Image 1 (cartoon, rainbow, N blue to C red):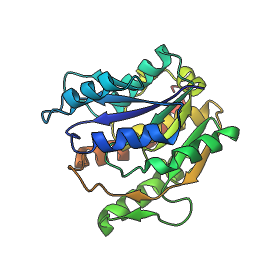
Image 2 (cartoon, helix red, strand yellow; image 1 turned 90 degrees about the horizontal axis):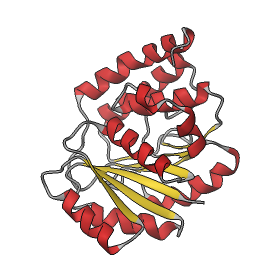
Image 3 (cartoon, one colour; image 1 turned 90 degrees about the vertical axis):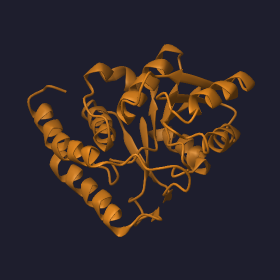
Image 4 (cartoon, rainbow, N blue to C red; image 1 turned 30 degrees about the vertical axis):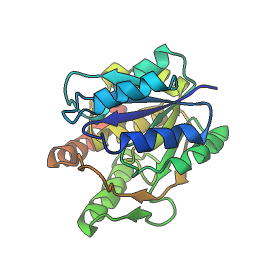
Length: 237
């Protein structure tokens, strides 16, 4: 089994030398793909040096910052071309703790997609202001009610796909880019009959660097959720 952990980066020079070795140490089958959006702080150059020193580290350079969803889609295609069996999404800033990666592997025994959930066993979020926590929690309630997607945390970005799931989805037709991207990928997979399982994680807000959260990302999620429902009704997924 070959497993690839995709880590998108934009100005993550401080975090990269810490997160990558931690991921690789969790299982010998893990490789890492750093997808860098031409970070002005030199993250891409650092990633290249790490790849030179370790054959399990790979780098995909993109010309400019174009959003999280586009970065993951590029990483998915890269993984499929190289016959990886499992493809993970993960942030670079330790908000997704690598210690949970072995739990994903266990959960895949009876699942096609495994989601790291902040809300499956209470609320497991550390260091977020109350306003952002409420926004996230009720965004997930909204997505669940409107789409019917049977998960507690559809906006989370710590997840794993079997390659068969990514092969079954027309990646070029995926429209969203921020939090809505996570909802859309899971919704499309669920509608194709793939098994989704959530496992509890603890999400800790970043200590290094800056959040990529914006009002545009929130607006996209608000309108994309009913659009997904309508696309499903009219057979346009």
